[in-house]
Image (tube, rainbow, N blue to C red; front, side, top):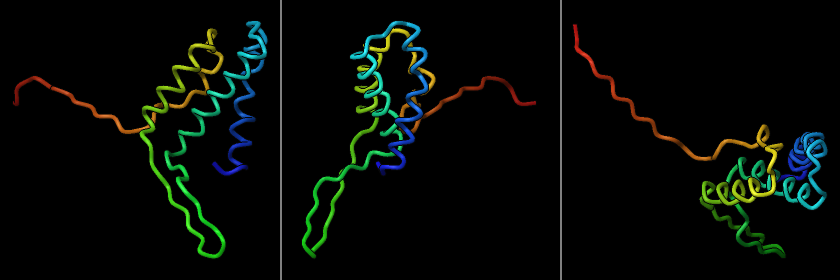
Length: 110
């Protein structure tokens, strides 16, 4: 994630501070909540990660793509363990990936 975007994500996540303080969440749990929330916000931008890099003049970089759904579930599960008061819920992004809908309409044609 580019540094400017990361700094904005971190700043946005700090908007839950009042909720955390009002509920008496200790500093360790606050740090974990911020960590998991920033992770969720960061992965919502895409699943590409640098796999390898090379350098001196033969510059090369390869990427790998991960299943964002699994990573999202892991981070959300960890966040829900420490965010007992739901302070981070308003900032939690939707699960990445597509969804499929199926609708059955029953009736007769006129």
